[in-house]
Image (cartoon, rainbow, N blue to C red; front, top):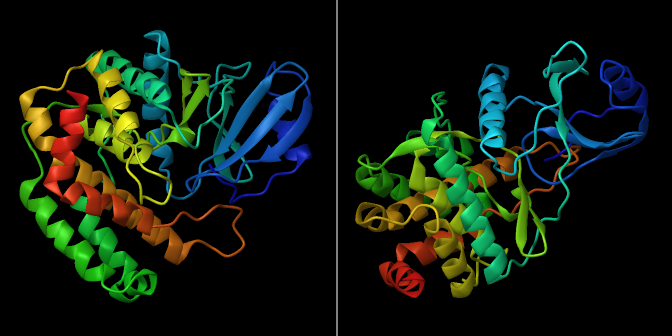
Length: 324
């Protein structure tokens, strides 16, 4: 979440007049994240998230996100619903941007997850994957393996080298490796693709909500587990791996979807792919984020350090051995 487009109370009042949600009491921009403009909205009746979709989100994709969340909600997964107005419309326009009013879920995002919280998150991810087994809509992964080399080129050699000396050569070598070995024989399904701790709400040790599905797409299903593992199992700067959190996450997931041999064998590649994807998007944002945007830039090198970890086969072998 972030704020690129500023809103005033009068604009939000005008929008809320189309809903049966009460009068505006409080409005606050949310700085975390990098994709859309997000606001906390409190009315006399309830609390909501107001999301304005910025340039990186294609409005044509919004019906996919709506259908995905409705499918998951109907299946009992803890996800927020889009709020419809009096005419049954869930998609609006405000400040020239497509916008949605979204259910607010109670809970907090953890910054230093415990093994129990990771287990709950793995279980929620597994439950979500089970629930999506009969979801028939699809959306291409615009940040999949075929997009990484073009994205690296858009960052430019000079831009990558401005972040760290030697980063450009490392990135393009990793593109070579992953393009050569990316698995093509694993189940493909709709996935979240961005299940970082700030996209999981917790009440104590239990997941109360999975949020921010705007990278959701059709992809190798186990890649979702790889993204989540890389996001949850390290210190924020990527220097320290937490084996207990890793074991909790993997065992929670296996409560719903045990890892078969093919998935276990492919996991090292998927983990490296997850790291390269976030390394590159963070590099791009680091280089290109407007100076006046209310958004928190994230350190790209935190995912280079994760990539170093997963590139050592002994580390992944020990990780899976600890889980077993």
